[in-house]
Amino acid sequence: MFKNISSYIIIQILVFLLIITCLSSIKVRGIRVWFLINENVILEGGQTKLMFDDLENFKPHENAIFVIGSSHAYRGYDPRIFKNAGIELFNMGTSGQNMKDSYTLVKTNRSKIHNLIVDIYPGVLETVSEESTVMLIQNANETQTAFEILKNNFTINSFNNMAARLFDIKPKPMFFDEKYIYNGYVETDTYFKSDTGSTYENFTPGGNFKYLDSILNFASNNSIKVWLATHPLKWNESYKNFYKNSYLPQVQKILSKYPDIDFFDFTFSHSNNDSLFSDANHLNQRGVNYYNTMLLEKLK
Image: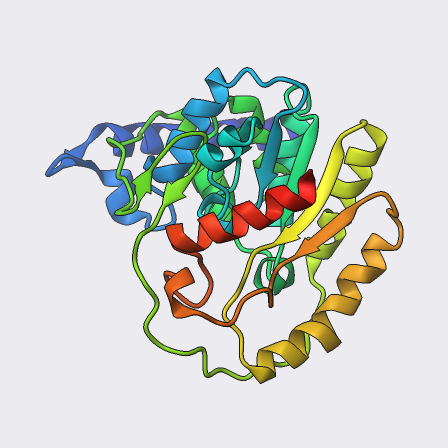
């Protein structure tokens, strides 16, 4: 009986692999059929792919600083500004990067990382998004890294993207409209032209808080110097109350476990000047210059 069941399972697996192989081989107007029928497979390319290409060749000194986080990170820390201050910086932020994936990136690149900035804000700590998971699986320079990310976030979407990676059904890179610089950084020159105007509910710590704690604990146990940082954000009085009374106390609970870790919070360190922002969440290049200059003063 068990022999028959095992044979049946093996046949099913072989059929599945055959189907995927066929779908990965057939193209319609230059796009593989796999992508046309499976919208959850993320196309290779963009900032994530370019970041991993640079990471593979990055040979840091011990004073080099790595940055992890979401689009706030990859759009918010300019390696050129840090280089002018005599500091190597590698920006390992990716779109929608959740703390689970950040934790995996730190662990798999431990040999390179001696100093680390963890970029945080309420949005990235409240919701565990799959966006970064599938993009990192598709674009990671090491298959081992992709497997680690899959293991931590095993869903149908992450599995589909691992299958796409293993069968090498990757189309040509599709890049963002923003300007990629180097070491993971993307420059944005647009300007924000309206106010925030939103109301904000109570902050609910999600799974990302657990993994933020895991990152800080891993760093403490592996002699990695860590700073938490939040760059300037657009705000109104509703957001200010939400941030200070609901969100910030939760961050301070974690930081109380790590007295040697500084938190550089620049959320309200500006007059809400629209010229610093590309939208309500992200800095433009003028804002990055403003923020990075202030941050370097703190790091010194």
